[in-house]
Length: 414
Image (tube, rainbow, N blue to C red; front, side):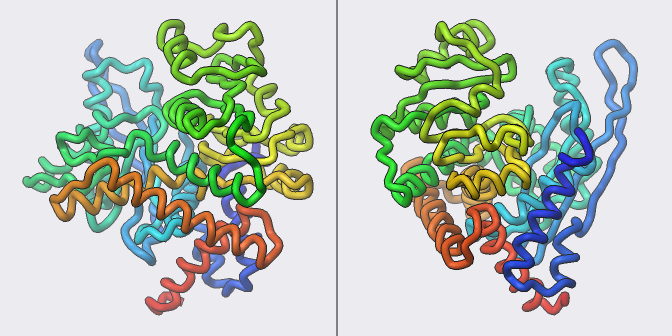
């Protein structure tokens, strides 16, 4: 990743923009631009061939002024310290914009999980969690799944922590299987929260969702579920893509059918007669664009070519600051990642609450609570954007930073 697209520098720049608009105390701004603590761990894993390999993992805890830190763990060969630090910062503001009693955390291991056997993956997961066990816990830092991590991996990590503490510790991690304290509705939460924000944005922009054309870049868990939910709302999904490329049909694509095609072939490519690259997906003549892949896909180079009226960031950090300026000038409403994909952490919060109470809710209850949280968060952000004449990302940061700053001052840290 080039220096200009360093996610940590981008996160710091986003904080500066919001801090200036808020007239924030410079000491608080400086505090928010760095994580409170970062742990780097190097740990051994015995591989199936009898060799021992040393892996490097990270856990960044950005700010715990309003409560314990919260955020995912990713397994990816591209994991870096700066990426983890940036993601922990974004988690603070994601939790803040939806009003959760959490600060931001994030973790990762530099590895390729696709190259690991099930036994190696379990050993890696347990070894990493044991290595970071001193700084995590239900009242300290509550991890969750992220890129290439699963409910099963969360279960192994929870079990490892429970062994260390010599008692069941379901509340140490979220995104777990239902049988060990997971929450109903969690699998769809990120996409469902994104769909709720799209619904609110469409109302504000007077866009009729019935027949609205949608393209989704990234047909993984969040992207595929978002496609189905938006299809249920009456939208017309015209293009989807995955890591191999995209497929396009101006007359619409049925989400269930393309999902079945991907399961059979390994990719969405070839589903329609018109295949295209991931970059082309972004520039289609559509109403709504959902980037649900990786960071920095909408840049200064392609932002002016985007025709969608709404961009809902199901992925983390898909839009660079330079692109944001172009999109705002062109009247595109960007529902920022810290708001659009906050459904996942919101239902993770619900899971943690249920773990602590040992009392569990129905899926209907979870979805209704999620809808209320997402609608309220969108309204606060939209009101802030209109009040200060700023884009939705800056407004979301302003809502969240104002909340964290109040906690910092109330606690007497500054």
